[in-house]
Length: 286
Image (cartoon, rainbow, N blue to C red; front, side, top):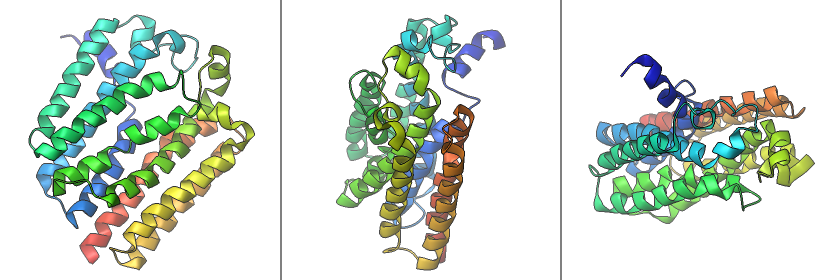
């Protein structure tokens, strides 16, 4: 296949924009370390790293098909491959199905509990693109979808999903609400014009304060969990470093400019990486 034919598929899965799948990866890997009470082994690290990339890419395929009529009215998304006609709906869905099957093949190398939970993860991923039509805060649905690597990690390590996994998922959901509201703030005017529902529209002028509260809730929940398991000094270094990034994002979004909000969104994976680094360092130094 020529480079010209491959290019639309790479664009479809946001190959040149890794921030999206990294936002999924860091909490999933963090949960792996917590579930295993330390390094979980290279097999699971590989499964979750590749699986995260594949499932996020498959989600992009479904999302772009679902939003193809809306995307043509939004400046930032008008040239996406399905919307522009570079790929057909059938091509995008077939590619997404192949990616999802590859991810499922990885899950098959874990255990029956993780395999069972993977069907729930797939269902949530398929529901999200359509939530934007009916739910005033679709970012909450995305929050569950983008946090489901956490219970999957516990299932893969422990063959069970304890309460701790759901506590971490709840905390991570607040982080997703924060960064995806920033993302929604970029397209607020376009979304209002086409009737799309987003948290940025629902919150109105409360958007910036709520984003900051969500950052705080995320860090509070995860700090509370980690302080019970890891050296406090390591946890506080990671949490303070992450909080400093959140405060920087505030300076970017307080004016509600498209450029500032989009930059804050794109930089969020570093915040998640900071928390993950604290988890790894904490278990290594414990």
